[in-house]
Image (cartoon, rainbow over all chains, first blue to last red; front, top):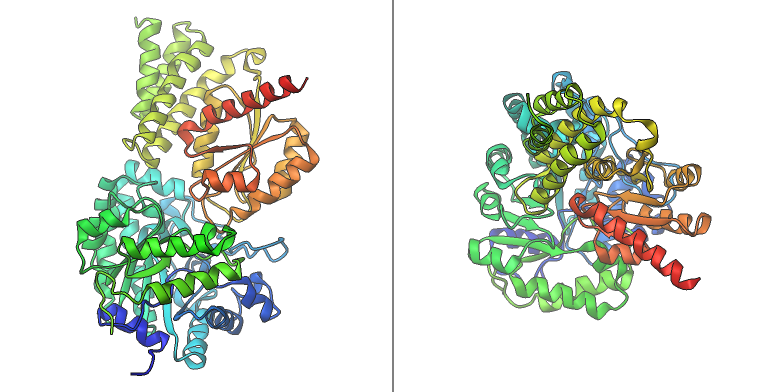
Length: 349
Length: 222
């Protein structure tokens, strides 16, 4: 049998069908500076141009033999489409991700425009997906959206939102339901675009910020609605930060796979959830890919992820674009070689 | 008529239970009853915030609870502050604090800020999404003892390294502390920071330790 393409490998993984080796891909941003330099462009420019966004994703994957791509790179696109503005830091030195400058400051101010899907950079991102699908049919194409709670924190001031959880419970819950509809619409839209998987990143909801009780009542139910709406493609429930106390509730939300970062105790998570659950994670991308001086240390970290019971080694967050090429190569190589053995939920050909 | 002890307890409890109105009432009562406003702050409000820091550190409180306690603290503090003679408000130590450029998250930074204010530090808050050079410019302007930088996201923390390098170049005696969700002690060391706080609850203690170690080191060199 000939070797699987990246797309096939990822698709089989999500179906829990045997693969030749562990796929190497991410649901978090994975653009690297080497791709941006090769294209002779700048980090600040790849967020606003469909071709640059698509090409930087494909080039990053090709340079390091990844199995998939994921766009966009920043988390400000939906808030921008709702009229909250965008800071691109075009004149700043180095790599700075776009942010939202004008968040709503009060629950009463919130007025989500009906046609937001056609505003800001969202149509441009759609175009980038089309380019990727045409130019790289062998790669898995991932879309990611913010979970309702994290998206709420992108369109209104996070401190007001957090206080609202205690002081204005009903109004805040209603607002979160409203934002859940937005996340669902985004997921349906990306399903229609024909992506291969959707990663829902509820990254601001770990127990570094919220109590498990609050998560259960205000985050979990909305996430479940989101995953119930993703019926055509596989989905991933990604939360970074502390997740040990909420991992079972994450699982109950119904995603095809769970993704956690380095703060999660994966061995314990496996014990709690069993071997049938697809589990992705959980290395620290900044330290592993951008800092470590010795590639054997990178190999050790990746092997530890696999040995602890991961089905696909994902970075716990966006890959910091200024990676060390040798570390990135070691990451991919180790996944390919050490990932030849079956993982808990997925067998091998 | 409530005695001083009752009023101080009311202040402490109102902060811990994040009851803003009760906290304001207790502050007014303190003034009405002639309680020294400095004592009301130091022995009423501050123990409340310290307890909140402990509750946060032990996963009994989470960020929303701490933020509401902070609001209660400030509500009472604003009532008491005008009655504290200016001279007594002068602090021995000062700090310039802000969230790094590209990071619009300032909750952690605000929690750390209040911990420093509660401990009597002079705090110069630059806000969030702060251009890198502003940290050092403000430090030079106010001659602060410490610069504290917060980054919630991995994607913004690299700016810290540049601020630290700039601070060491422009003002070698300046101590820089870093923290935030994305920052670990290893990263703090890697960036050349003088100090690191893993949470708002321990930030002031870590900072005091850092300043003390620095002065001890300087004494030994003399």
